[in-house]
Image 1 (cartoon, rainbow, N blue to C red):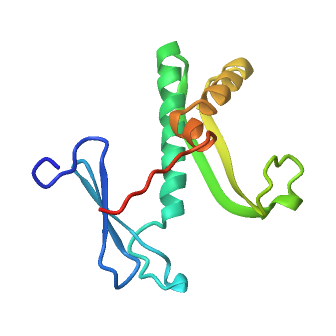
Image 2 (image 1 turned 180 degrees about the vertical axis):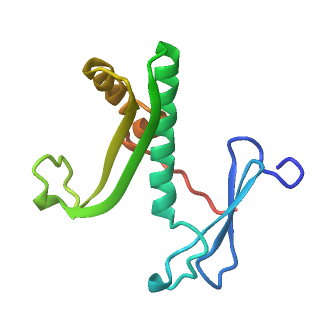
Length: 147
């Protein structure tokens, strides 16, 4: 921690243990996460899954924009709309998991600007290679320890 701010690449999340609202510190940024009132929270911030979708959506938009800028293409705006759900694996023909439930993230990307079909197809391929997309679609090893 540098002063009151976490080191770059470190996120600190603190909760009181009395409710679901969480204070999040990421570098110099401070924000909240919570659950909606219907789930017992106080709705003071986005849910953890909303934050996950926001991570994927912002990374997608940034990656597509960066590529289009490098190519000097006429991309004017990127809009990424995401939804999260859980489906029973038996209901999913393309599923390769033996788990009873599968996490599904639907991502719709709108590209505004004078782009031809080939450029749009390339930007879609680039969207599927954004770092957060690659992380979420890879095997993840979360190492947890109690301090």
